[in-house]
Length: 84
Image 1 (cartoon, rainbow, N blue to C red):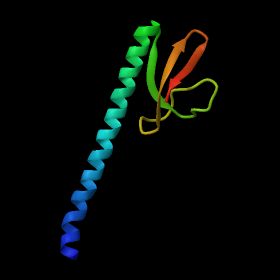
Image 2 (cartoon, rainbow, N blue to C red; image 1 turned 180 degrees about the horizontal axis):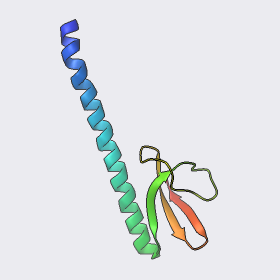
Image 3 (cartoon, rainbow, N blue to C red; image 1 turned 60 degrees about the horizontal axis):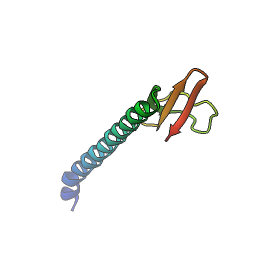
């Protein structure tokens, strides 16, 4: 049993890591597509970026892409969070 676990456990961990990486890449791609489409529709810059504090009145692109990912509408008065 220990031999089977020693062989199978690393492979299972690799599958989990691959699945997480694939899910993160799909999330980033979806955010980029949403930002692109919204920017074309509104004719204003929309940026997909990590949001450190989604509850803030003015969202800031801060953190890394492993955090909450949002689409931020950039305009002269500041920024507005469109989607998380």
